[in-house]
Length: 308
Image (cartoon, rainbow, N blue to C red):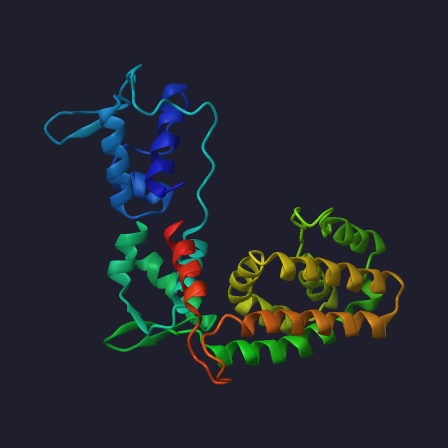
């Protein structure tokens, strides 16, 4: 749900049900309450005026509550609308997707703020937060540079990931809960037949990271999780890779239940290398130093962005 739609539906619900309004009916007051720029507020107010829920009075165009038309194109929601996903999450996901396209891109705070319907200050705070994650870099007089994500970064990530997850498993041994591991097994369901799709749950990795109790391991995965999530969504399109992932998750969890640490570690490393093999197939050409993702994966990323 867009910010404009959310503001429209929230005010419509309040007015229709005779609830208190969240603030004064001014663009400034509504912008401050919803923590957005005036643009989505202005658009939402325009729709509410068209539907009769708000009306302008006086020379200054002051807003007052109307009764609403019974024939309004968008009727009032029966329940309060859910808040849309945070703008930080929205921007971060978009930029990670763009980085996989391999093009160097410069972003301006003002243009980005207008696109996402938030203030320039809020946009700068998001950019600074993403710079801390290594996704953006501030370049004086040019704006914010989006770092393209290339093949060698994924190779490096996989190498470090093996070390980090292996250490997380070692540190987590005394904190593992058998029922948690059985739940992970139950969520990874092999396909009943060749025509069925297996059900995968990737939470085993997060579970080991949290149970390790090591803040630096957790920080590494927090910084680069979004890249991995995109690759995991891509992997879900490959039935054979998905089935293999399900089997490996179950094998790791069962070894952990038996407290067979060497087998659990071997199964974990095998799983990570299996994921790397799938990553290698994303790139065009047979050259080991290939830089560009294959056309099918680039199209997948474009579709993910357009779906937003």
